[in-house]
Length: 248
Ligand code: FPP
Image (cartoon, rainbow, N blue to C red; front, top):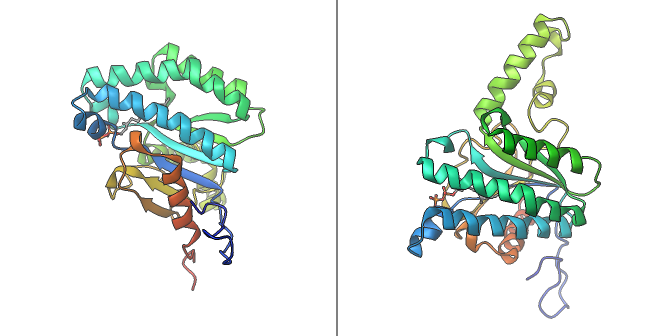
């Protein structure tokens, strides 16, 4: 592993690794992982939740400032009720137990998405986690739950238009920065790198506005099998990219 720029024999100069400030991860492949093992899909989600915990801690340890994980999309409600229920139970147990672990890493936990569709229990847990972690000084972990980027943009447009109507904004105030400020990720830098495990080449309604200049790395590993070394590999690929932001 060449994460911090040392060659195998320590003798050749390797350019220093350029770390992304903000990483997004589409945690995909839980269902296929379970199917391959003849297990129910919920077993894949449980294994995926363990990977989420491991990779989150690793990102914090290596100095990533923002991590956004896609846990449940606005479209995922269409899954069979049994699978949705098992995901809700998993979220609940993680919010009760695992997220308190992140205290040691001083991780700030935020939820992006529309909380109003979740049960009262889950909503309260989300708010508690946000409140209790908001003054920490470590990595910001955005957990996208009932998140859809089109939904986020529609919500922003509605809120902007309401603020124009009630005189808080004028039409001339509307620019790219203002739109960003009305998204769930307001005040955060755009993702530098989005990783999609499981080999699918799709953005799936994740951070559409924010990913205008994001580098994508698709990896052929199912999320429950994703290791720290896979993250290292994605970081090395990212570090070798030449980002031009539309320039030359
Ligand atoms: C997509 O894989 C994964 C999900 C819809 C759920 C992701 C949730 C977790 C990893 C649990 C994380 C827990 C917390 C607390 C954030 P898929 O089911 O679409 O897989 P497939 O494409 O192989 O069917």
